[in-house]
Length: 487
Picture (cartoon, rainbow, N blue to C red):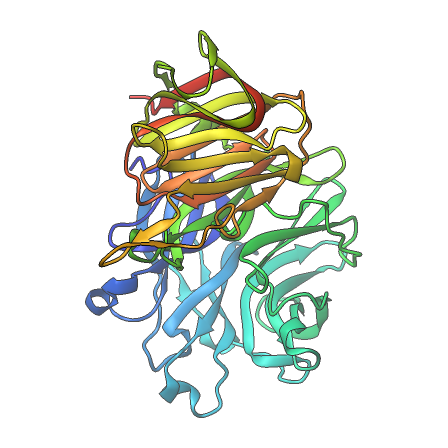
């Protein structure tokens, strides 16, 4: 099924557990029925998607079934898969939220184990279940096991999202370390990483490219985001690059996997309550995939997966019509001087599913420029993808910033951009930056110069024009393209 940002019918995609086998990405995910739980029952299972191009996905259905409300794994939450000794080993979080189950002092979370010969049928091994020691680590935070083979140490390592028992309550989050020789019995050790930064570090991921090791984790303390740290040794130190996130607020719990040549980050864009731009972000949503690229200094950037990029191969005409300002257009290029004002131009009707691409060059002191999406006829209501050179950032914004109540319009906080949708990037005048926007229904993913990504939702404005704008400055938009999926 062609669904660029996959979402199952009547359900949502939660945390991804990726694996690559025989030329296909096997994407296990937490299947969230949400309001359909009354029909389908309580509990969370692992379902599986398969894809080799991140354009077409095959839904394989339930693979790891959750237990009853009387069992520890009433919810089968995030984990990892490793192949060893002719078998596939699946480690996952067992979490039972039933008060009657936990009243006997059983911790909320634990690590559980299942095995398979073919990755089709999984056999749970409840005897391998283990909990936090309750000595170094708090008992109820013990989740998201990530297992690797440590060649240097000659043993298996498991990283866990955990919390220490001692210290400031909001800074006890750590990544716990366990070791094993047989993938059945685990020794609990001192933390792998204890930065005293956050409440917790969810969905830890550890991988190596060349001489660099990368530690990936997600947090919700200061803001919802997936971070990474880098080191040339598993013993650290784990240093933070200048720009340490793959995306912004609307790309969470990302885990990575490679196909032997390229590596990808698999996360989800949360839905919003009532499918409304002003609604609260919700847990789970649609699948979003970024390609992860290592730079010469070891830092990581993200870009569009190649197959997804090429999928939008049907070029559409560019139909410029200036709305505000004295725009100059030649073929598909557009330029405007708006040193003391705002200027915008329509490029025509925007398809529901499309890719917009342009090279943007701005002058010194330009306060903002970028792409407008789903604008109304006079372009005073739309979504803005705004480059802000003076602040070295990419932001998402939309007008009007108001909600229609029963009797009148209510201001929804006249903020300069959508909260937490701010992506830092070093920007310089006179240099062309490629901006790429991929939209499918309510999902919008933006890439700037194949370095940073910004994912968001666009619910309220369903259709309209697209175009460009400049705020107090000058900018040129060249090599402009509008493409829709190949037929």
